[in-house]
Image (tube, rainbow, N blue to C red):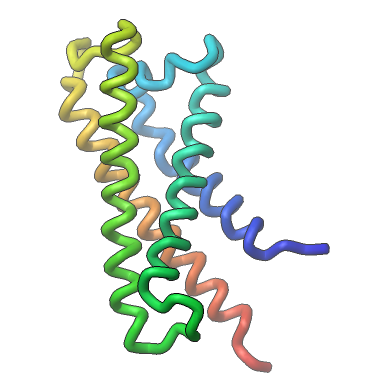
Length: 151
């Protein structure tokens, strides 16, 4: 049994993690992935996958709030895309705020460090995440439309 939905979420998640990984060269962003385990790559995968799953659930929420159980029409597309782009900025912003509020008191993260300041790095990370997820959403959506065209 094949699951195109699971494949789309997997492509979205892997694409997001790969496209966001160059930002890990910034020490203050890398420090955000110091928990829940002591192994950095595992932390990045756990946190990144969790964030992407929340992102995809948020997309479902946008669709349900926009069209409910009806068919998506051409007039709904602009509303859906606007909601998706808003979610693409809101989810990483909330994730960053939660991470900072949880990790800072425990001594795992502080805005101070070498190189780019923590707050600037965090804002850069949130914006880049929003760009990456928006691009992937559009590309995957286009691929779904093209593969479902009548032959």
